[in-house]
Amino acid sequence: MKSAIEAVYHIRCAAAEAEARALAVAVEQSVEMPVVAIEDERVLGEIVGEVRGVRELKPGLFEARIGLNVETTGHDAGQLINMLFGNASLLEDVVLADASFPAETLARVPELLDFYGAEVMLLIGGNLLAARERLVDETAAFVSSVERYSYG
Image (cartoon, rainbow, N blue to C red; front, side, top):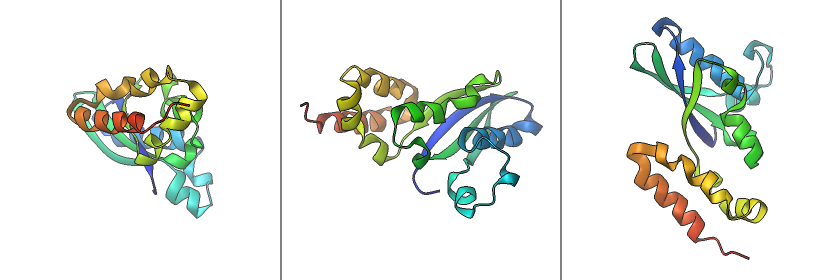
């Protein structure tokens, strides 16, 4: 996968189901169709969500790290929200816990400011609190993007 958003989902399930549930979320969040029906090699190799890791947080609760190709957002804030939450938000056993973004997404901060206004900064930066051990690095990248912006 070229450039990817890494979405972190918490999934409640039995240990024996964790890998399959993570794969199901990756597929649903990316292509929303059975992978066996996809014939295009580019879609299979670059667009279908990629399970990057699954680990048990506590019995019955797993963290699934899923790569979602940034191209699937169309570089649009609304589609970004859809890619992260999407149909997984309808599942009682799946919660979006965190996400990290590639540099090209942060580079779009000026466009978001122009389109949505300064109030959007709270929405964009609000997830920094979930960064935990990456808080300093994530905050620095975010602040740097905002500082480089020249308000019109």
